[in-house]
Image (cartoon, rainbow, N blue to C red):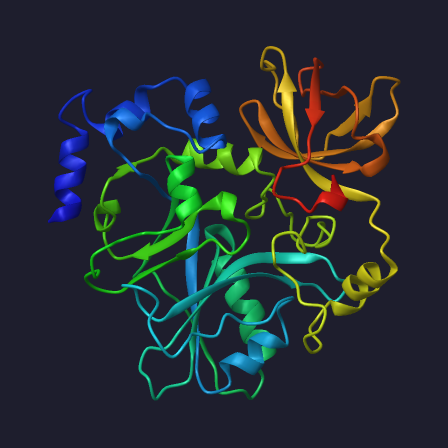
Length: 356
């Protein structure tokens, strides 16, 4: 009922926050989300984005924890013994599943929860919806004789929640009433710049007071500005290397945990300290190109030297895998139509200082 009321309010006219969010210029929205500013006159504290391209798998059973530890780059977000604030027993973590060659297969956000206090932990794996079946097959292939069940979990929908003001982001406080039904709200484990993750049965952000509905286009724009890859377009399976994709910056890898598939190359690269390329946020300079920039297009320096490859993007922002010694200065790519577009690369402010 509350969710329906919120969506009805969004359709009543231009005075509603959700309506204004959809009609304001893309440039204003991108600027406000990138800086965590917003139209504070509306009174909204949060913007909620429905992520229909993300889906959940549930892994449960007495062997679920050791099973996942042998496959993931990171430790598990084991649930605590007490519920945090008003929400269910859940903690989130970020990790990749790797191939035996050490390349990323799937990026996931993990939620660890206890369905009942006397049961083994259950884990929800949030992944790109296009690879749910492939990830399920990957898990089933490796479970062998372990007592583990792997199944899609469509009961909950995935939302991203971003603060509308710097004050809300800095406080980190979400004074919310006790939710109804199965609901999980937790910090996005990758970086504070990505706000919170909300898993709920509800159709809308009604569980959050002073929340408004956002356009997923703007969520992805904000994500690209922050240099956060997500899904198979940004992290092509079997192609992307985890440390080049800034997995360590996003709290997605443990160098002290036990063995996992693909660990050898990742550990060796880390201990040698040699990373020659990184995934950078890039901004297209000037008018948007009439032709499409194909993923994998070579990025060139002003002198025509190869600086890396364009990975993915939306509008005038995106991600590119670039050589660290060639990111400074103006770069350019060629579109599918034969045009040329200039772009610049930058290091997000949340990256470690040594990487900038």
